[in-house]
Length: 134
Image (cartoon, rainbow, N blue to C red; front, side, top):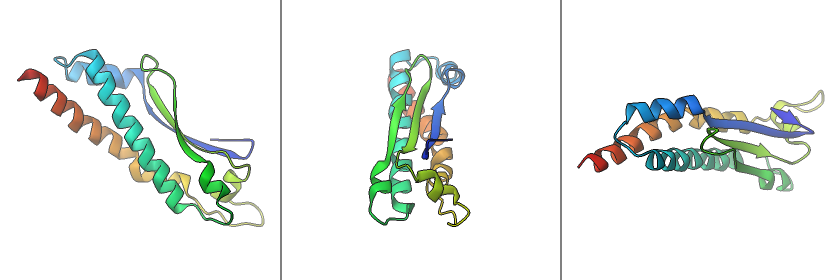
């Protein structure tokens, strides 16, 4: 997604997904589950941010400095982190222009880690659940 030259890609755990995790791990308290989901979503978003900063071409450093993982919304509405690049030419670098070839950095960072969230959540929730059952 782009807007006014910037870039944004969302990493989301929807309310429906949160309900599925809660149902799968019925013995885990809602607050513990929400905390595990929030922490893991944040961690994966930060990995995406670091990867995008590693992949982005650098001239002045302004574009790299504008890349951030930002949390949006509340736990009740699901947990969403947006990977954003606010430099006005961010989308031109990602997608290219008529005169400039594309140099993707956001989409590869997203693709690299998008599957990690589900795996991390599964491991973390199982660990919390087994600790609470003991």
